[in-house]
Image (cartoon, rainbow over all chains, first blue to last red; front, side, top):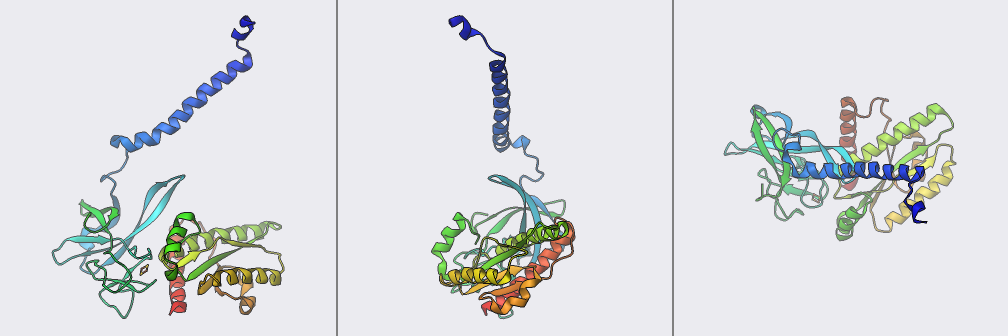
Length: 170
Length: 153
Ligand code: FES
């Protein structure tokens, strides 16, 4: 009896081998995202995680302008290209400011001077939310917080933007 | 808002602010190759468009799941069914129900619909991911936002 048990049949042998190889492959699949996350050397990106948004610093004026760019984003099951936008301008202190256009009320997209009645403000078409030029929400309108500000960096005269952060954390 | 759990949580808490539903309409038919291809392009485009639209106006609209129908189906039956959708949504109460479509055949029945038909002329066939297509979609979304805002006023 025991003799027979020790024999490995062709089928068992194949099974073992396949499980081994399969397991090895599965481990590889599991490990790579973790390695990507913990090992900064493996991350292939230029200015940290900031993306070149294709806007030359010289072209930024005191008038907010909308810029759009795309980033690669891994979101659960999907890796996809995500569109991002920002309103960029130069404030009185000559600093570059980039606001996320996502309304802090329920998330619609705001635009600079989006309403004829409210010049010199960002306007949200959904519930008449308003923000001053510096991104602060106008009291009495639905939003309860200022617009988020993008992390930014200037490199070789180009603007790089990262993640939008709530005011005070940027 | 999209029809997914995470968004619904926000919806439940902010119902008074979300008064508009968008229903994308997609014809399906596979009997003829040419027609099938056309319908498939329409489906891709309307999906893309409705998602972009949802992004712009996310705080006030709910994007319903796609309503699909057979190209060959009897329109009266479909209209009755579509009106059932509208009735259900208006009870919530959503104030505005928009049906979004590239299919011109609905235009004829616009009066019988209990929702607002947003018919868009189909775009020229082209690569969905091309730069020109992105521009076209962006323009169409901009126009739709304006249109919907007019109904909100
Ligand atoms: S989503 Fe902007 S005001 Fe409500």
